[in-house]
Amino acid sequence: QEIRMRLRGRPGDWPLNKALGCSLQDYHGEALTSKLVSVIQQVIVRALTSDGLVRPGSLEILPLVLSDSMVVFRIVIQTSEGELIESLGYDSNIARFIGY
Image (cartoon, rainbow, N blue to C red; front, side):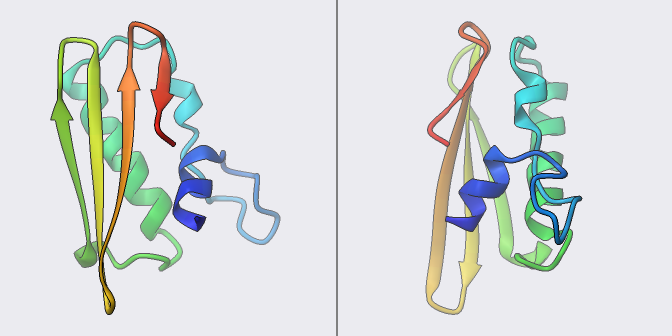
């Protein structure tokens, strides 16, 4: 649940750590390019690892480009109890992130 909150949130949403959050809303309406996919991956990594919630070595983000306007990010976190998997989709046609 905390992972989803960070994906949805913006820096400043958490008073104890104002750097947390992805600000994914900033990318609404942008055309899907390989550069945008890379930028979003980096933003997700920073949001989940900057304060130690997730160790960088235990995080894998796999983008799956479905079309020229849609990508799904599969976020895989290795934990002591197994894999935790989240998915996040982006559709530039409707200018929205889906599934988060």
